[in-house]
Length: 412
View 1 (spheres, one colour):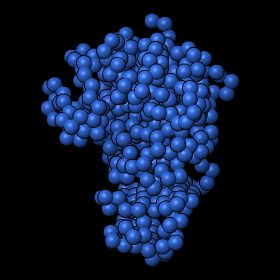
View 2: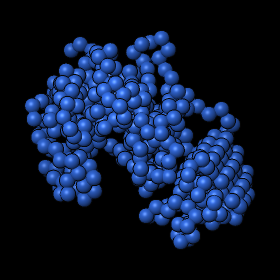
View 3: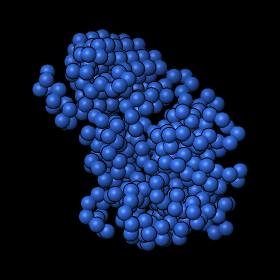
View 4: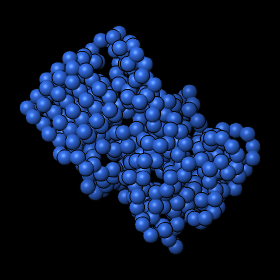
């Protein structure tokens, strides 16, 4: 079999409204995660580790933060024309206005496909936390001579109502698809579980392009899950790839095999950060065989003076004095003053936490300030009047430049 030209197209234009206020100043893929990364770093690292190095990133809403991150962190290839991570803002080639759906975004950039002439197009989302060897999915795609392959993961049926649910026969060929069903069909031989689409696809180029053109000519949502995959299913060979079958080198026995999280809500985002912590984390970032790449940081190592730290990660350039930090993710360049106490917090870069402040289940956006002696995360009534409070009681301190922060300053 001749080598396949694979082109990656990363869908990175999502608003991420359920992640507000973290997405008030940036798109969802640009949200910082795990102390030093952005969410988009996970899918890009999967492509790079899988030796797929020709990638276009389609951006849209509040994209400047993401563009700057990609410019600084993902410049590669030099004079090698087949190795690039290239940002593509909306070109409005087909019509004025924003993309009308994921399929419309690719349709409006068919010129990139025409120019590059790939055999296979990998359309992946930019807002999930996971590891995946895409080459293994590609091998199955080619072995089946598939026109499309959809990455999927078994999820508890009770929690599957918010996903696209797939059905596959014993050979892995897709035989059914429902978008966010109220009663998801359970997997044969695995009661209590449904097969959920991850929103990641491999397409044979000659099968995808005509359907994109046909979809663009009629009204609709122009979405891969709702429109393109069901139409392909009627007349093409569509297969399902189960992420649980993906073998990642260096994965430790205590990790969750097939770990994949849609961090689209504040609760999911916070919990995924907590999943990185402890002696046996569900998702261990310490894997040199499958690293997650991100931006470099020129600051010094973290400095801890008289500080107690347990089950936590502390970023470069952070300085803590006589503090108590438990089960928290602390970003880079953070200042934690004398006597401060943090528990189950996610603190992004350049936050200043004043002396003797107490924080519990707090997400602090970049550059935010916590006054000395503040108590946040202990009184929902007070927290709800002063900060953003999620339905589970997480307290979010907004970015200083956001409208939310300006409102809080006026209230204070």
